Amino acid sequence: MKAFIYQRADSTTQAAAAAIQPGAKIIAGGTNLLDLMKLQVETPSQLIDINRLPLDKIEETPDGGLRIGALVRNSDLAADTRVRQRYGVLSRALLAGASAQLRNKATTGGNLLQRTRCYYFYDITKPCNKRSPGSGCAALAGFNRIHAILGTSDHCIATHPSDMAVAMRALDANVETIDRQGETRAIPIAEFHRLPGTTPEIETSLKPGEIITAVTLPPPPAGVQVYRKVRDRASYAFALVSVAAIIDSTRGRIRSARLAFGGLGPKPWRSLQAEQRLANALANTATFNSAADAVLEGARGFGGNDFKIPLTRRTLHSVLAEATLT
Ligand code: SF4
Image 1: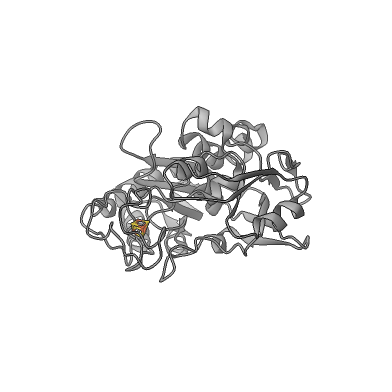
Image 2 (image 1 turned 90 degrees about the vertical axis):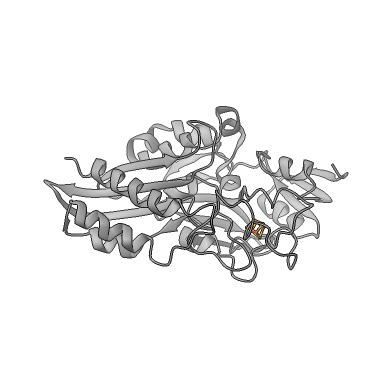
């Protein structure tokens, strides 16, 4: 590991001012960053530790939602009674992610910012446009079983690995930030993660030095909340396909639906078109098929991940059948 300067931040603006320096990186739980540093994928010259900042609270908002501090640990968020009772999809998504030890360290902000698990991104001997812009993409003609089928580009086909972010996408969360001048903004999670296009190394809409302070959840939408994760083994594996569904239905008729997917795209993937096809429709195979068609419109496999297209369809059917049983 390359030598670096370690510094503790005393305030969010101080952290933001330090983070704008070339070679500086913010560290919170460190569950992804330290691995990247050991592999020389990340070689920061300065680490700014924000763990002592007062960003570890979960608070009620005046509109009936929740404000989750950026340093709230994944395990604490999953176990919070308010989250379990009102945002079950989020609690289940968190518990589907990583291992208990990692969830005890990993933070809300860090989870949103974690990097892809593309094998070639972690191997500095291989071309990777995300790690080394302009070098190529080894996954395109390589082993791409875990890669994306939606939202890809000729420059990168990596997926975003977070489970938590998929549930937050279904819940229409907002990401709160601050910069070194103390200016704050709230970024809808739909706009927080970017598609790769020709610049896969730019993964979020954060500006240089801007840091995450919290994630806010609007009041919970009506309906049954389901998180289903399909993976290669029962624990500690990233999603091949995951579905966060919030379905409001009665007696076989769907009133409204929200659907977000993990394992399919470079960002938590929401299909508004599929949701429109489910709204005010009968909960039957034809409706579920129509929704799956909408989700998979434009889907493209790259050989090793072709199976994700039928797997997405089957997983969505199963989730919708479960969510509309009553
Ligand atoms: Fe790199 Fe993206 Fe290609 Fe993986 S898919 S090798 S992250 S450019």
